[in-house]
Amino acid sequence: MMYIKFILGQLKLFGMIILSFFMFPFITYPRRKEIWDMKDLPLKKWYWKFSDTSETGFGNDETDNYNYLNSTYGIYELVKKRDANGNWVGDYERFATFSKLRKWFIAYHWLVFRNGCWNYIMTQVPKQGVWENVVCKANYPEEISCREWRDKYIHGTQFVTWEVDGEKQFRYSFTRKTKWYNIQAIFALIFTFKWHNMYNFMIGMSDDRYLLKTRTFNLEDN
Image (cartoon, rainbow, N blue to C red):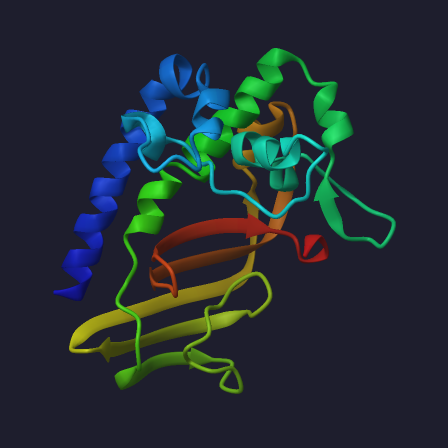
């Protein structure tokens, strides 16, 4: 039953993303600043759920502009650079030189393909509490807890089921070596071509949402 419930929830989310796919050029992007300004309002317009306006904590330039740019364009992920300490940071200066069409493509990638309907996702929180009846069905490497997601930093395979107040939950994830083309780069930078050497897949109940995620990356980009 927990798998059926998860699938039905993801199908509903998929339908919202498809709707957002067509809404973006006519409603979401033209009203992007209006949508950002309503983030603190108790009553928001109906199209609020079709935008990612949740990014905070990036500092500001006296106008809270960095948070707005990261919410609308995901600059800290899609247009980034290494700082003096070797850490990835948003490249706001380079972004400012982009054409209007290129900015439109980046926003389309971020708001529809990357973080489509993020506010809806965050309203569906799995039941939290003490894990009971834990069953570890797969765990590699064994020295890592079976409860830990396999992601960009923890490689291997994990599959665990448990209950919280009688509600069954699950997590399954793996990270392995591969040769994969980064399709997302087409939407973000249009003419960027890059091969990745790692693949990660995650599905199940996270701490704050129902998670279904797939991505490729290079180890040196961590």
